[in-house]
Length: 187
Image (cartoon, rainbow, N blue to C red; front, side, top):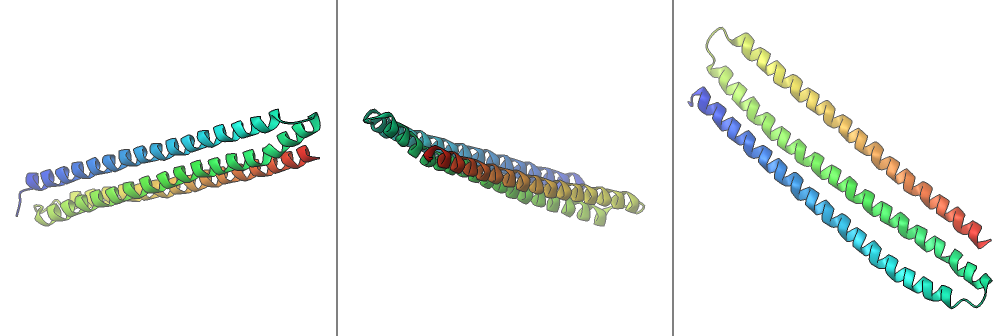
């Protein structure tokens, strides 16, 4: 049976390792998300440059103002569709990042909770007589902290869902506004 300081050191070491793993996972996710956003932006810039070149050539070849304005109006819908696709791509990256970071944090918290519970259980089995109230108080404090974390986690998930719904709503409203603009321009 290991002594209490040795048990505590093992738990502290395991907890530090869990925190290191969590930070590594978070930073890896941040870099992966930055890479995805950069790729999305690069693709959008390339497409925009290609589309602008084609549109400019078409506009310069217009024979009269009517054709010029007709070509201009025809570009509104594809441009709006690309902007909507970009917004959805960005929202998807953000949503996936939030879900992955939440999952990582939940896993690490669960592991840390198990380690602390194991330590408390082991210490309580080997605690001297008369310390039952202290051990019970400590277990209650750990239970309350765990419940508080669960509530925080639940609220965070709900907030993320609201943000995602708002982004989807904004993209939808932008799509509707772009459609109205295109219809108006065609008239």
